[in-house]
Image (cartoon, rainbow, N blue to C red; front, side):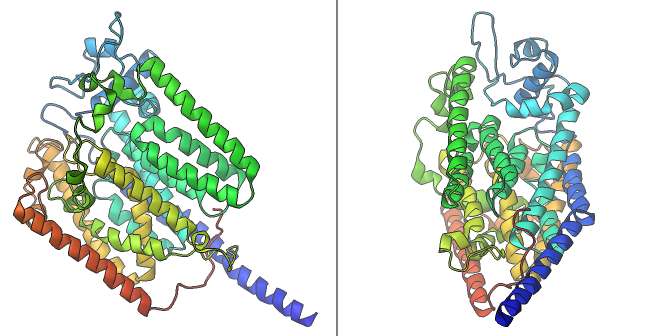
Length: 506
């Protein structure tokens, strides 16, 4: 009996710090640091509102199509943009000639933009109230919400210190591409918010509320863009797998039914409205086949250089404009090594169970990176760098925050690189807002001395000459070396702290 009392006393003494830490982290994350992260991301997006995407247009490429569809939803309550195009309703934000992108779907001249409709639906009210400015303000607000959610995921699920987590979040969100897509009219930032919410719902224990959130995220992602289907599939697989393992067979059956029905509805609506399996069926660039969106003769071997190019390409790599992303490889290592320290974790659990949270993040990041590498038509498109991978970048931020939690001294160089990224974005915004440069056309010609100096050590994959190939190899060695050194340092340090984190169900 006495031994039992001692065990109970010890158990309570271990649970008390967990409860205290949970309340403390909740209070801190819910207050000042949360607002700092929200305001930082919000302001980084707002400063880019007046920046021109190209000369004679504040928005370009797909952006006018999203705005026209949102305007049609606000005024006519339908997706047909033919009247908006005929009336040149795009002139307030696009003074240049408009690339209409659409074909006439019937004899009445109906035109429906070849883009999934969830983003215009989200922007319909802001556009109806304040036009294109309202749309950009709404996206900046979504960027702030994404920053908050990223901080909460890092602190509540992965045990990162609120202060360190806030520092890491700010370092990434004040620079591009997270800042730039908080001002450009693309579904990338709403998708980023959904992905972070989805990961939070799939990991860290189960509840009915989290199950509903996970299902909503999985169903919603494809309606932002068909290219987000692989990420939705990973989240769905993780959700179903976790519930199956926990013997929640009824939840698995119901969720599988919902996912199947949602998929059939998605295909049916696209056939009826767009005339194909995807929205690309209504696009004037894909009249021969909607699947030309991935290329007529894709060279997948040549596309493999995007694995590194998405990070370190001279003009379209995210680290070219925000060097803080050079921490990404060690962040991935931190996710691989991270082990769930929740008090509810069974010490006898299998490896994948102990690392489930980190594995979910790695799987989502990997599948999105693979789509941007081998499926996307090009990396060097008519957009600001990083467009295809923005939805998973908040997960990269979480991974880097876990690394910084393990190695606190890394926070200061990370913050320094974050300042450089913020400086680069502000410089570009000033140039694009004063007619000196445009975000899409000639951003690589910026007069920014930091960028012009830094780019000299980065490979240009548009040319991919011998010198660029050598630079790519050098960077591969450098990044691999950073992973090796971090791994060695991890081996020399004691195991992760056994202090319990906040509630895993947060």
